[in-house]
Length: 266
Image (cartoon, rainbow, N blue to C red):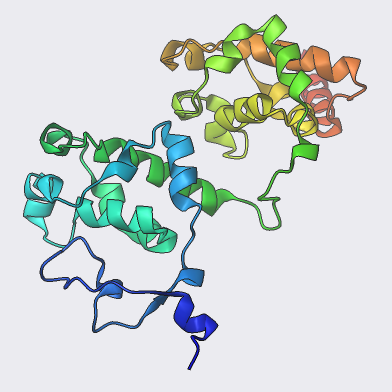
């Protein structure tokens, strides 16, 4: 009798969860079977891209991190080894829902003990940011970008005016201190720089963030790479004008209203 598609797609974990606590309960032998179709096979690659390193994929599930984790000593269910295991398997929802990701105290004891030098604190931080981005993502937003959407010359055009743009590794330090982002989470400096570096020309030129950036330089003072966001914004504005993009009508209306109030008080 031949195999069915469902049988071929099954993920089987023969090791006992008692012998290997890093195996999530949902993959234990007495639990419902997990299908490959339930996994996000690209999750670990997305995580590696945002983390800027594939090192966490080298995890051996040895348990050195869990053995030295202060958070786990307080509550046994918080298991860093299990988080890394689930991330590698592609159990995205389980990783996002894990309380450990948000409770990791970033003490680096795990890093000092890990034979593979997996920095679980940094991985947890990246996962937390990814989860927050997923939560904020508008319904119907385009998830996949094709080659046709990219303009490779656009990034080079911006680099000529503000070369520091290419140094950004999207750590989020700029967004964390941006007053505009505090008023409106959709105004995200990190996301804007990402669009530029990807070559998403139309999205970057149409983004209102370039017009409301107050050039207060707080982002520059916090950026570990010295990315000069204010210069980048000026370069983008020039590109927008040259390519026929008009100043956002909503912002123009707000400015007119402010001027009218000022004239009325004077």
